[in-house]
Amino acid sequence: MSPRFVPGEGSRARARAILARRATRSSDDGVVYRAYLVVMTLLVVVAPVLRAATLALADAWPGLGGSGAGVAGVAVCAVLAACALLGAQRGPASASLPEIDLVLSGPGSRARLLAPTVLRTFAASAALGAIGGGVFGIATEPPAAWAPAIAVGAGLGLCAAAVLLAGQAGRGVRAALATALVLLGAGTALLPSAWIPGLAVAAAVLGFASAAAAPAFAARIPLRTLRDQAARWEDVSMLALSGDPAIAAARLGAPVRGGRHWRWRVPHRAVPAILLRDLRGALRAPARSVLAVVALSGAGAALALATSGAGSPSGVFPDAQAAALAGAGVGAGLYAALGPLCRGLRAAAEGIGGPGLLPLSPGSLLAAHAILPSALAILLPVLGAVIVGAADGSGAAAVGGAAGIAGPILIAVVALAAMAQQLRVLAVLKGPLPQRLLAPIPTAAGDLSALNVLAWTFDGPVCAAVIGALLAALTVGAPQALLPVALPILLGLGFWIRARTRTARGR
Image 1: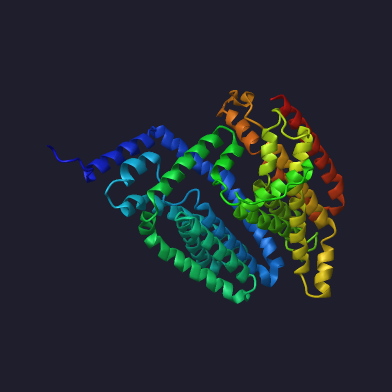
Image 2: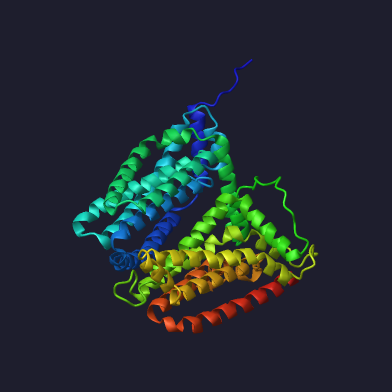
């Protein structure tokens, strides 16, 4: 009998060559076109955004005063904590399903096989960190300090990649890392400002050191984890490209396991029972709900901070244009933060048009499921804004600062939160992608039908960003126009929700 075949180095090399040829089936013209597309995107999209961010940061930094370093430290820790949680979905240790089944499952060194992918991710993260450090250095430091800022930014980028890789190791590692980084971020807000640059340098050095050990750590991640992530990522990519972002986002979340044996006394009336059910659903996914609560409070604090200048040269964003840029980010953040709290609302929207299980009309059922997310969407940002106002002083000064929030800033926070919740209701009522949007649009630049799909897919966050920019600019430039502008927008979104509800009934 012939000996059993064991895949050797030659067979693995041939398998990798076959997979590489399948992944790179493109002509030289395709490579040239992709290079042209990348260069033009950098020049037309990325460069103006970086310039605007640099100018906005340069305007905002003097207004932050001595707390600027603490704000930067909290932001860095928040990004690192988010990277730790994102490790559950994708990370530097990644491969396609054929590569996992044909190459990584062999007897070869997994560290050596994963090293190219891991190091490419670390290099890209270092480049992004260097860009961020350059923007920060140009906006806040003299030219002599720009090179150190870029180096520290690159080190922090490597640190983010290392945290992302560690997040792939398992749920316990992710939870411990995220908790430690959140506590570290809270601590940086209390530390003296002179200590924070030293902590940033130490984290950057740790990031550079972690790049050398990354392939060996990646080899310890179980193949089952890599395979689950690869399969999930393929499903999400396919759903996202088909114009169904809600199902794609739902595919990312892990099934909820906790709270299956909780015993609750369900009220006899329908609306309190729905409210209690939504609250129970939020408590059964504590990590997502806590992140949503923190993000909503932070969005209100950020909007209050961005508009606290109110046209004064001593404010954080005394310029309406810079405040609009910050407001756009806050609006998109509010919209994203409300996602984990709207699962009951999404389930109610998916049941419209089918047989009713409760003695409520579709509109009443949607309204009942919208009670909890709407209340949190308004109360938590207002709480964050009030905390920002109280943090301006101590004692009577703090009370006066909190009371000062009750002007145009409070109107902007409440209006933006209400609009973000209305946009979330619109999102759950969208349904499948209309086929008419896939009709070709021939132009001299090619088929532009993909723009219709992009506009339909991302209409919620784009509208939230536009409304946030408008309200922030009005708060700084013309606060007396806030109500005349906000009320028609709220009314128009209400009519839009009514129209989509009727369309959903007819599906």
